[in-house]
Image 1 (cartoon, rainbow, N blue to C red):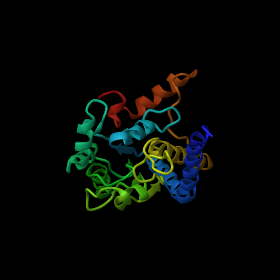
Image 2: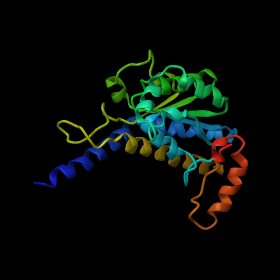
Image 3: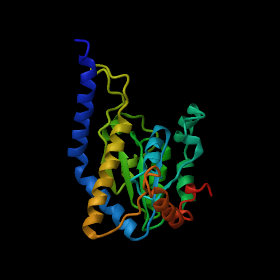
Image 4: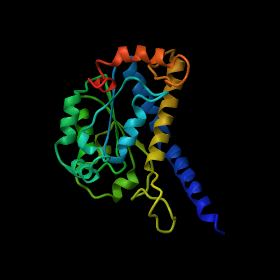
Length: 246
């Protein structure tokens, strides 16, 4: 039947979402608790990724419903939009991730969240390693399956430097279709975004139970949104220079 292939992909995506829930459900709750502890202590959440994992950095930063206490830490070289080949070279180059983390200067009670599906390139590994060395706990959003199947370009993996690991269950190579020989329909962004949304939902539940008001962006396209966001901008602009280009 001609419709069968189209029906198979949604089923496989849903199966991976269920797998993520069962594998990382406890870690998601732990990540939410760690973030709430940081926010209650007036900490900043430093978020990093390279290549297409930068999509998740965008997902966490200045996002409707997202935390205002988020700072993206990154090197322009890892952005693939204006020089894709360069972004691959930079992600694999030793020293850049460490320099990015050191320039951001995270310190307790801050938290770092590092997105990398394979977690085996120097850039995300160094960011995590440098943050952990500064006493800042790292939440790694990565895939154990993809990491095992990836070329090892560092002696350690992202997960090795993390206090909490959210396993997204992305298969090696990322592609999901067709089932017999996957070559298209990458799923890493879907799974990582879902994992982050679950963290935010658990964080909201924890904060509500404790009577904590989270610093959270409101959509600028709803009435009153600009006013809410203006107060948050004033609160965080000096600690998150990326909010105003400063």
